Structure formats: C-alpha cells, structure tokens
Length: 108
Image (tube, rainbow, N blue to C red; front, side):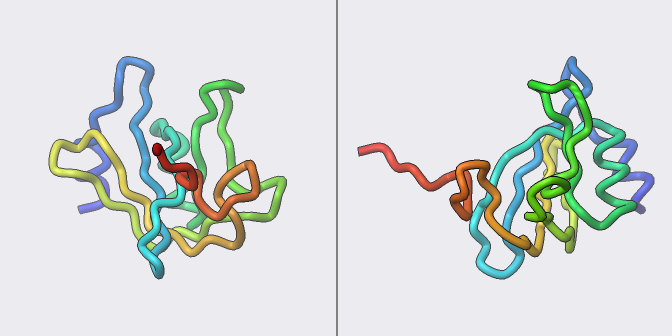
C-alpha cells in the first residue's frame, strides 16, 4: 500500500509537493514545507520530518541543527495526491522565530 501511494503523488513542475505539518496531539497546524521524492523517502525511513529547502536548494532535516525535530507519527496524502499531511510529535517550536507554530499572526 505504501509503495502504491508513493507512486501516486503528484509533484509540481519543480518536483515538489506541499506538506502540511500538524501536531498529532493538539491538532495545531505547525508549518507548511516542501518535500521532494528524496525528502519524503528520508522522512519515512528516519521517522523524522525531512524537507526540501527551496531557498538553499538542499535537503533539510527539521531540527537537525536546533534540536526541534519532528517525530513523524503518520503521513497522509490528500484525495488528489498533490498535498501531504504530516502528523508529528514536535520536540520544540516549529517556527524559525521561536514560535510554536508558523501560523501565529492574524489579520485584523
């Protein structure tokens, strides 16, 4: 089943798929990051979130430097197979600003 789902993922023209990261306990949306086939494979193998950094053009192991790793509990794919949902147990803040979630600002 896993291999079948992996083969269905629809990457964009740059070989990337958006990945929404959600706290498995609180259900808070922590961040959105991009994955390519290699970072998704590494995520599934390591059991920790690994992404593709568009700015640095390299694989990025979330928390590899800061220690704020995200232990992956489950990865889901949406009905169109063009977005991933990564359910994690976070070991610290998700945002580079130190905020728990990247979605801490509101309009208005």
